[in-house]
Image (cartoon, rainbow, N blue to C red):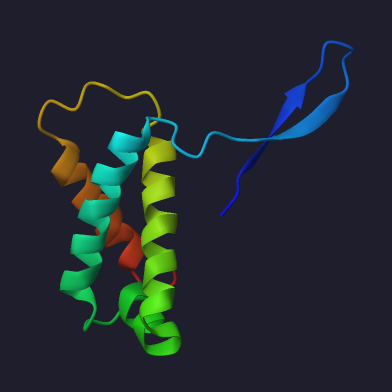
Length: 103
């Protein structure tokens, strides 16, 4: 998925530019993605968004879901460096919320 952001040129005109895919660096994205995939794999037989995606789109849909959730979590925590052991708790709460039906 490609993300775009609006930027302003020196002449005052706005233009679209490709946004940074890894706002906290690739290592952070990769670690988050691993944990999201682990969460999804443990919940794939349950109801909710994960179960719906697994039923309707199969494994490919779960790949896309994992990327979407990873990208969103990374954007929500852009430039954050004060985790103090809270990373796993916050990521699990985020995934629990995203997995709720009609979210």
